[in-house]
Length: 407
Image 1: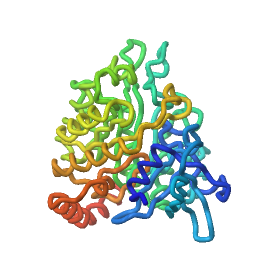
Image 2: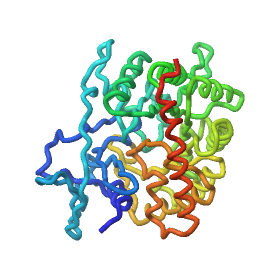
Image 3: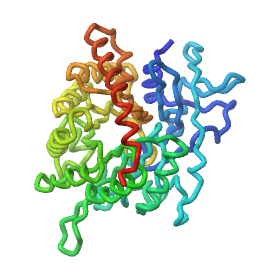
């Protein structure tokens, strides 16, 4: 039998077949929004000390050949492993009613934001400019340019976002809203320079003042001369910044992220990461990389580099998303990914980074606190776990305070 986190990793790598016993409309709809990473079926794996949320690939070709299948009987849903007939009970979160509701302006709410785990995800701007260059310099694994304007609104109105965030808070209990955007910086005399980071500010301010909760922002780093914009976003209500530099190996970064390599460079992500980590505090900034494409050794170096910057590593298992240039690249080996995530836990523990403090469940990645089950616990692991548990208890009044709108 697999541990819960091992099942999570296996599902990310192998995907899952939807069995005949399950209705196609069970659970949340498959939402091909943002970069496309959340284009799977949301499930919850019962686990201790907390349940694990997973966005499982089910539509990609590799998932159709999976050893795992979702089944249903009188006791509920379970994932069946055809290799050894093991059954793993799971829950299928229902689609919230607000997904189909419309904002005051008439936009279906799921075209403004969707749940990925238990947090609200919103792409705030039109499609990333890397997709508009000829030839395209978009990241090879991304499908933002095909989703924005098709599966979701190309431009979000801040009033619509506030209405959706209200609905997600009141009906789904969300306490975290995550805004992200692509590259939006053009130094042309006939255009005002408004890059992605600046585009996020009115949305951050509106949600902070009208809804409350924790707010995260992800955008391509701005030039160092404009770092004051990070300060302004913090003042507006941003609690967390994330930086997707994707790959540690410089050759892989340049080949698979040509736009980022040509416009900002790999170093810019770490400079911004270090700056914002000093402003917000250790563990309140994340560096995001993709595992399963470059070598494991490179990914481990990236994890250490992120931790050294005062951030925590958000490691995404490569998913060959339909419509991307890498849709035919096979997903990684689960055993290799288990090694990577064991290293994530050890790296965070060595640095004493607080993880799992807030009740925010991210279904797109294996979270650092989940990876603890992949290692044989030592005395240091027990001390680290006890410290994080204490911080979770101490954080409760702060969480209650943050839930209140700032207005």
